[in-house]
Each structure stands twice: as structure tokens, then as C-alpha cells.
Image 1 (cartoon, rainbow, N blue to C red):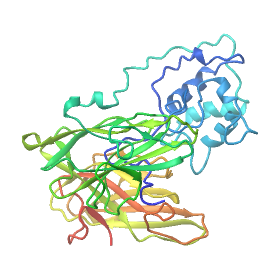
Image 2: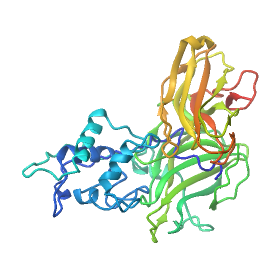
Image 3: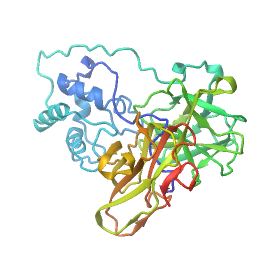
Image 4: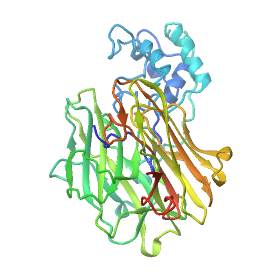
Length: 439
């Protein structure tokens, strides 16, 4: 698998999680053998049921709605009940559930007490008080600040039929599919807001929108063959929502010179749905001409290409130093770390005045999860004289030497950051447009 397997990360994107706005008053959870205890039900509602709903969404294998759901045979191991697998997964040291979220200590203690007791039903007479779920989540194109007629959309479609849905094969399991267009903007244009379009939520795991100067097929649809110069523009993963740029900032969109767009959809049809038809994608508001915003943000890349992981190595650190060529303050508004499956942790620090003893964390991911990469909003300022150090830590459990590369079997160490003003973070000396990495 190549660089197209950039899972879930997004610069102008949406943090991956499995939260939910469902009410914890779940009298409907009662089955012939019991209902879930109220405290357990509340934790599952907040942390899990965005994905583990009825029916399951975003590739989740089963619902966690009822007491019966938790006592059903696990799909991954029919000798165990689902609640036994839940116990193992919330304590998994490598890829704990819920993905993209963190259980509070009190929530973890609640689940542990219940699971250790054998996952008993709710006590007779216990009634769960209804909670105010608040206003409906404002997610989707209908909640963008620009009217539908002014939105620009890019959506999954069938090959040769841009208005027809993409048929997700029932036997596809874990599938990456790419859709391509020539950019529609011919003059300077900014994106001011993004919204996910989620069509068949049962099988959509995440999507990412890239730009590239490498020629693509207009209206193309097929397996992903990501060019090395692909640059993040937007993305979404479960639990994410709309994203508005700051009021006086717009994200630079490709235009003028020939550029192309690639919408990468990650489908997760492990349930084998035979009727999955999808038109997911992205909608955005744009500004151009007299409506251009005062500040233009760009996507810059931090990190390193100098990756060399010995076989069976437990902990290998790779660091990349960025020395920005700037005489003015640079405003970082989001960070999107990216490694592959051998990643263990990720950190980018700002070294004030270039002094390692005066470091300030820009983003810190102490437990890396390739399947749950996320956007990290920030308001940090990089000042003249500062440097940025990105450190990627790996655990190479394979018997092979692993180096930098585009395949998932290779590794990467990148942090895609949105910065204004343009040209953003660029190496002193002009090496690497929109890149500030070790060469």
C-alpha cells in the first residue's frame, strides 16, 4: 500500500473520535434479560456510539447499544462475549479503543468495575435520568456559512459517471479509492470553511482532499496512486465536524498554474454490505477577488526523510529540524502529524530562539494510532529566530529494515501544518517549497 494510506489525518480537517450526542436515557436498551446500568450506558453513549450504533457506522463491526449487544458472541472470536473483547480493547497498549478519543479515568474505572463483575444488567428499579443533549450537531453542508448555490463540492462517484454513486464492493473489506479533478479555480482563491458530506456512513472510514501538480484524469475514479507532491487541503474522520477558518484568514487553494485535486476515500466494508452506494466527499466555501480575506494560510510540511529502522528495534527516534526563513511572526492554526503503522509517538516542539532548553510543545501524540490520525488546532506563533523540532518514535516489530517511503510498509515522519501568512514555514536558504524538513 502506498502513500494513499494516509489514514484520517487532516490539516483543515476534523478530529477522529467516537463520541455521540445521543441521550443517555436509554430505556430502549432493555432486552428480555436486562438493560445496561446507567453509568455504563452514559460512558458508551459519550465515547462509543457514534460508531457502534444500530446499525453500526464508519466500519464498526457491531453495535454497543443494548445489554444484549454486549453479551453477544464477539465477531472476532466466537468463544468470547463482546463485553470480554471490550475489556481487552480499552486496555490495548498499541491501539486502544475508542479510536481518536481518550476515556477519562473515571469512565475507565466505571467500565472496569462493570466488566470485571461480568457485565451484569441494570438493577431492578434503576431509572436513568434523561440528559439534555443540547442542540443538534451542526455538521454538514447545510451548516456552512455560504448558501448551497455558492458551495464547491467534490464527491465520490462511479467510474465514468460523475453523478452516480460509487458501488463499494461487498468483498472489499479495507479499500482505498481515489477520485480526481482538474482544479476549478483560475484566479487566486481561498477556502474559508469546509464541511463533510457523509453519504453511506456504514462503510466510510475517512476521506482526505489533496492537491497535486502531477496530471490526473478529469473525473477519474479508481485505485489510489498518490503522487509524492500531494498536499493536504482538507479531511474528515468519524466524530469530526465542520471547520471554519478564522474570520480574517483563508486557506490558499490551488489555481493559476495547472493543478489537480484528489479525493481519497477510505472504505471499511468488513461487514460485507452488498448494497453500499456512496457519494461522500467535501463541500467548501471560497473567497476570491474583492472577498479575499486579509491573511492567506498555506500548508507547510515539517519532519524528516532520514528514516532507517533496524529489524526488531523497540524504540528508534528520528528528528527533523526546521529553520524557518522568516523576518515576521508566523501563526500556526493547525497541525496534522503523520506516520505509518510502526509509529509509536510523535512530537513537534518550538525551540524559542533556536535554544533546545527553551522548548514549547506545538503538538504531542504520546501514543500513535495509524488508524486514528487527527487534526490538532493550535494558536502558536513562530517568531524570527525560532526553530521547530519534530521527533518521530518507532517500534519496528518486523524482521526487515524499514526506511522512508510511500508504501504503508515503509515509514514517514511528517507534520502538515496550516500557517499564515504565506509562504509559511520554508527552509532558510529556500530549499523545498512549502517544506521545512531535513534534506
